[in-house]
Length: 248
Image (tube, rainbow, N blue to C red; front, side):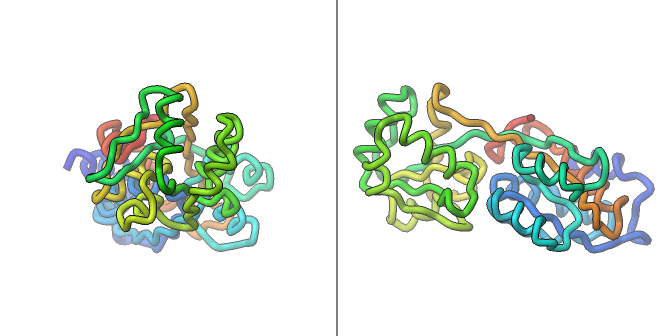
């Protein structure tokens, strides 16, 4: 109720008379937050929002390919070249949240050691299979983890036990028994309730990603698109924490 009230106050003067349909492109890590905010936004404004999620690389390809959309939530790193290419309205980029890479495991299996880098390394090597996002699809966490395996000296071992996921949740591979451990943005690990959210990877090897929103230069209703970003930015710390994210 407090979130709905905040949105109503922030969007005062915008109502069903000006209702429109909005298309939101979002990276998968931010999708759980967006889905929590949007129902209250739709009730407060009369606007309707269609949510489409993809990897950071996939979203960049969609936008560069000319796909029609109104608002995008993407990594700051992914937004930079699109800003340079004038894909967004001026000064519309607003940071929304940040997230680290989380660890998931079976509810009935051993709990991976995330308290030290060496313990984490041993847990990975002891696992039968490890699920994480396919870096070739442009997944932010998958790209980072592939580099991390090299740095940790376990690249060949991890290739042999990798369960690479495209366009989904790595935790589902643990839920269905295909893997013992899942690694993905914490908000996406938390999105699979049938597995254990162990926590974040050790701080020494952690990678945080900041997600930001921007309005498409081709948006039909810039005011409505801006209202959606206002609603997303109104998400408080409690909601972000609940979904495995934090303030940027």
